[in-house]
Amino acid sequence: MPSMPSLPSHVDILRTLVGTPSVSSPDPSFDQSNRGVVDHLAELCEQLGFRVEVVPLERSPHKANLIATLGPADQPGGLVFSGHTDTVPYDRDQWHTDPFTLTQRDDGSLFGLGVADMKGFFPCALHAVRTLGAGALKKPVVLVATADEESTMFGAQQLVSEGRRLGRHAIIGEPTGMRPVRKHKGVMMERVLLEGHAGHSSDPSLGRNAIEGMGRVIEALGRVRADFAARYHDASFSVPGPTLNLGKVFGGDSPNRICARCELYFDVRPLPGMLPDAIRAELSRAVQEAIVGLGLSAECGALVDGVPPFETPADSPFVRACEEVTGAASMAVMFGTEAPYLSELGMETVVMGPGDIAVAHQPDETLRVQDLEHATGLYTQLLARFCGA
Ligand SMILES: [Zn+2]
Image (cartoon, rainbow, N blue to C red):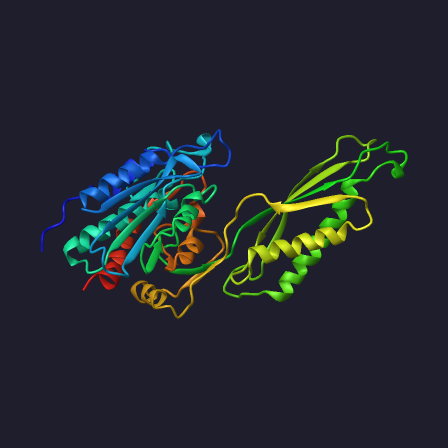
């Protein structure tokens, strides 16, 4: 068997990835390209013999997805290692180290923006491939590195719109402490806009008050929430029902004017099995009913595309294999990932990666060197099982 080429150490790869900023944000003043990270990963993949594709995003051409394949392409099946290349923005004055300089303590703790979420995943996946060796691959291994998971999900959505045939099984290396995760809730961010018309406050009949209408809408949404809670329940989530949070309300200007326009932003976290479009229709119906007779108009809709809920069945052979290799029962998590998109592409998907989600999106984000080594060992076993002899 030909020996695999060498690869920089986990820490050295991570140092370069952390040192290459790739913040994504809906706020253009924070948003950056992910091309530096993608190009570096492409280079490392090429060193290992992968066939590499860098695909610019149609909706954001300065960003790109990476799809790298190693092993016999004519064989179906195989294993996909998938991660996002972007990070969230950061509060520089709250960090005790430079967020873009990987800093290592004597106890093996590493600090830097994105170490856990989720730049640390990539050296683990690459080292797993190098450890098993290209010669041992009977089925292809695919490394996918996406853009914009932290903002628009355009990267994962493009994989779906391209109808990418990537493999049969996928691991998304979001930080789960290497426990297999097979389901999460969805994320929906919605808005309601009510419009009436303004008038002098001394005579209510002169106008149509949108704030009064919003009061009714908020009561109606509370009833929908109670109804969801009665209909849907999944005890594997620490918050076992769907949630609906009122996040922002704004409208009007002056106490002596009838408010003509009021807007509400809220978020819904549906359980697996709840369909976002059906939920949206139900919410919209409740809003329209709430304002009957008030002379107001209502517009309801999504603020962002959102993330569908995700579930891979407990008896999926891939879930079983991840449980066997890790010795941990599969679980549900509260955060959203790209998993629903990979599921839509026909892959049995498990979210499982090094690090702790609790340190993500925070100052002093950290991961331990031993977490990287542990993850690499487990990924190597799964790779041998799903792509090896
Ligand atoms: Zn993440």
